[in-house]
Length: 198
Image (tube, rainbow, N blue to C red; front, side, top):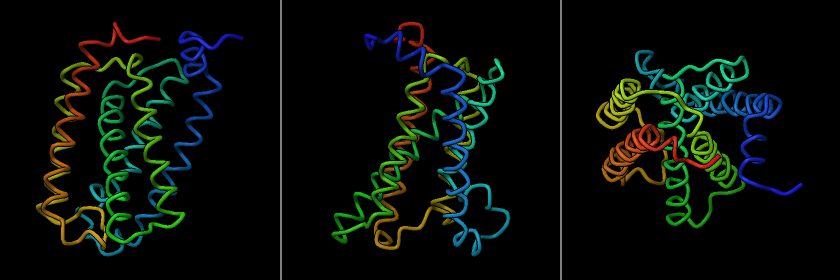
């Protein structure tokens, strides 16, 4: 069978594929919360929700996939998933590559994180045509995302990369603009989704 955009979109939106993707994301989410366990153990309870950034992003996408499987949509979860999956997917890759430059090695687990976080960002973008969120949903997602940055870099709840501890202010600045870029991506998807290929 010839591989065309229509065929690829059919595969991406097929119920069986969505179920498989849900299982993968759910397992990744569970592992992500486990990975953050040591940091949560030293975190004040009031900040719990803001610490495990990547697994919360994939959890948003789990809700999106579950809604699609049931033939429904959850626009707020869609925009939260798009913004946070792209943001934290790319953020984690930059942090791991930066750690590699600083230390010369990140080990197999570091490379696993690079691959899995890149896949997080890619899957969010692949479904841009399917999202139905509006500008009001983007406003809510923007507040959540920028508020999370404040909690991370004003209240010191950012994911801990010990080898990059001397660069926290630079990382915070980069993170803020990455958030802005991802919010703009969500706005773009509303304005241009009807022109996106499927």
